[in-house]
Length: 310
Image (cartoon, rainbow, N blue to C red; front, side, top):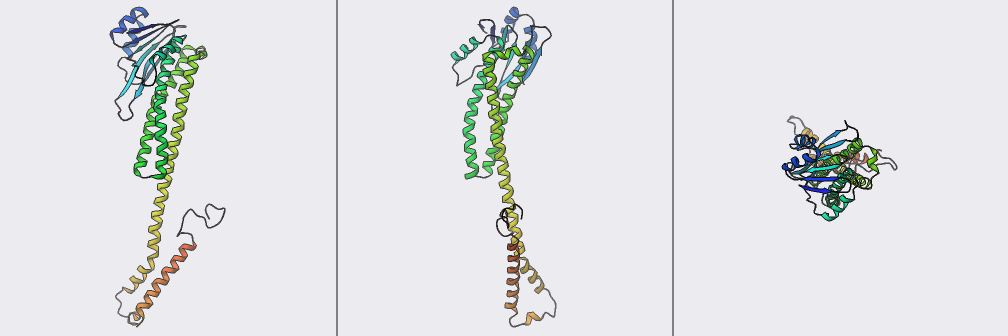
């Protein structure tokens, strides 16, 4: 166990179950009750106790890191927060981007355990923002892949990126819930603290970034759907036009392929050339009819200026 004695409050960083008994001797049996409730929790959880005035508490569990590709691989820690102390259990400082000495200095600047807890949340949020920054580069490459190398593989990448963004959003939303829960439990007076205001902005920034990236991905998905639908329409149009142009050949061929005994044109000297002329002429007529209706070229090109549908 690590205990940090700060200006007006204490932070107990518990790493083993045996540490709980030691803290309960200082803070009372409620700590044992809290630990029994949360020790087996493997999901986000919050509990507010405002039954006694000026002795409000907020406790719960928070998933603060999750692997994008593996459902069962995530990190969770448990916390107990009052007006006098902050207790965390199983919180591991695995940040690769934050100097721990700077983190401790921020904790020491916190005037209350609520602000100290917000500093911890802010540190976790900073780590998430580093991941989001690398995600931004991945999204930029994906945007250009859609234009330059669009294929089913690109669509697969779009949906993988969408899933990754949903994971980050799933991790970040409980931070917003905790912020509102802090105000609910301890009152609006806590919002006046400098660290609280700073970390609140950081949480908002992360959520806004995720929302904006989600909009970009939705636009990419819409773009892919439009392209796929247009190409599907082009294929159907091509097959339809080809079938229509072949209709005179099939119709005249079916007529002259009948087994009637009396068919004078079969005996004509120029019957073969006559039949070719009829077939070609009919096909040309059909072709120019389709062209006059605007069905042979670009379907999106209107026949009349300043009109979308005519």
